[in-house]
Amino acid sequence: MRLVQVRDLVAGQGWFDTVQHRMNTPDGLAMHWSRLVDAPLALLTQVSEGFALRAWPLLLFGAAVLLLARIAFVMAGARAAAAVSALALLCTGLYAAFAPGNIDHHGLQLVLMLAALLCVVERRPHLGAAAVALGLGVGLESLPYALAAIGFWAFDKERSRSFGITLAAIALFLLVATTADPYRVTPACDTYSLFYAALLAVGGAGLAAISFLPRHRFAALVILALVLLALAAMLNPTCLAGPYAGMDARLKLIFLDRINEARPVWEFSRLSPAQVVGGYLYALAALAMCFFARPGRARLAVIIFAAVALLVATFQYRGVNFAILFALPGLAAGLARLTQTKSIVWLAVAILVGNSGAFTLAGALAEGQDKVALRAMRFAAQEACGHDAAMAALKDLPPGRVAAFVDQGPAILAFTSDAAIAGPYHRGGEGILDSYAIFTGPDPRSVLQRRGINYLMTCRAAPDWEFYRARGGLIAGLAAGRIPPWLTPAGRSGDVELYRVR
Image (cartoon, rainbow, N blue to C red):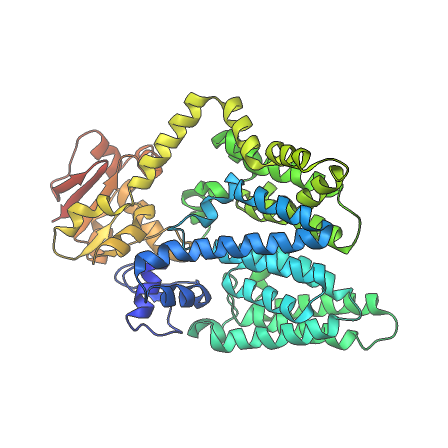
C-alpha cells in the first residue's frame, strides 16, 4: 500500500491529498499515512522502483546501527560501540523491520526514536525536538517514546527552553507543510493533525515559559499537564481514549482482535512461542543487562526508554522492536563493563551468548523444529495470497472492482489496475464490514450490486478463509463446492480463486 501511495504521488497526486481512490471502491479511502515517508521513497524511485525497495530499508538499518553505536560509545566507549554494532547485525528480531522490500513507516519511526534517545543522552535539545516531532508526524506508534523524551527535557532546566521552542515551531511547520488537507483543520485521533500539533505547540511553549521560573518548576509542570489535558478534551475528547477511539465497535471482533502483532504477549506466545523467546524475552534480558552499565544520565535514559517500550510490547507485541533497539546500547555497555578486565575474546564470547540469535535458537528448540517449520510454511502460504503471482488471473481480465479478503486489497492495487473494497486499515471500516457481509452474510449480492463489483477473489490459505467459513454464508458454500449461479469461475493461481460476478 505504501508503494501504491508513492506511485500515486510520483504520477501527480497532490502532496496534501492522501486519498486512495481505488480502495473502498467506488468511494475511495482517506488514508492516515504521512507524506514524510513517501517523499524519500519517491526520490529513490527516480533511480528505479526496485532500487527504492531495496535501498530505503537498508539505509534506515545503517542509520540505526550508527545511532546505536553512538549511544553505546557515550555509555562505555569504543568497546561498547563495537559490541552494539555486532549485536545489531546479529539481531534476528530486527531483520523483518529493515528487510529489503519492507517500506512501511515502522523502520523510519525506529530510527527517529533512536535519534530522540541519543539527543536525550547527549543533551541536544534542538535535534531532540526535531526527532520527537518528526516521529509523531510519521505515525502515532512513536507516542509513548516521544512522551518519555519530552519528560526528560521537561526536567532539564538549562535546555528545556530550547527544546520547547523548537518543538512548538516544528510541530506547527509539520501541520502546515506535510499534513493532508482534512487533518490540518480537523483534530483527528489516528494521525498527525490539528489535535497533536496544537498539543505539541502549547506544550513546547509552556516548557519554554516554565524555564524562566526560578522556583516551583514542578508545580508549574503539573499545571501545564492539566492545561494540555483540558486542551485535548476541548479539541476532541474522543482522542483521550486512544488513536482508535470512535471506530465502529463491530470492527473489534472481525478486524482488530485478529491482528497478531496487536495482541498482548501472553496471547502472542501461544501463536509463536519461539518468536516471543527471541524477541520479548531477549528485550527483557537486554534491559536487565543495562543495569550493569556505568550509572549516569545515559543509562537512565536507555532504561526508561526500553522499559516504556517493553511495557507497550507486553500489551501490544508490536512494540518489541522498540524495546530491543532501546536496550541494545545498555546491553553492550553492560557487557563491556563486565568484561573490561578480560580480553576481547571474552567480549566476543559474551556477544555470541547475549545476542538475539541465541535466544531465537533457544526458543525454536523449546517449541520444536517441526512446529516452527509448519508455522513458517503456513505463514508463507498466507503471504502468497497477496503476492504478484496471486494476481495473475485478475491481470488477464478487463479492469474492474474486486471483492476480496481484506489482506488481499493492497496487492490488488499494487499489481493490477483494479479497485478493491477493503484493506487491513482501521480507516476502511465500511469496506471491512461490507467484505464480512459478502463472505458470511445472508445476502451478499445486495452488497456486490451496491458497490458495482465485477470480480470476487478468495484464498484458501488466508486466515480469513477459516474465519469466514466458520460463520457460514458464501465462503462456507464455496468450501463445500457449492458455487452460486451468480458467480462464474474465472481463474485460479495456487490457493487463490477468482470469480466473475454476474
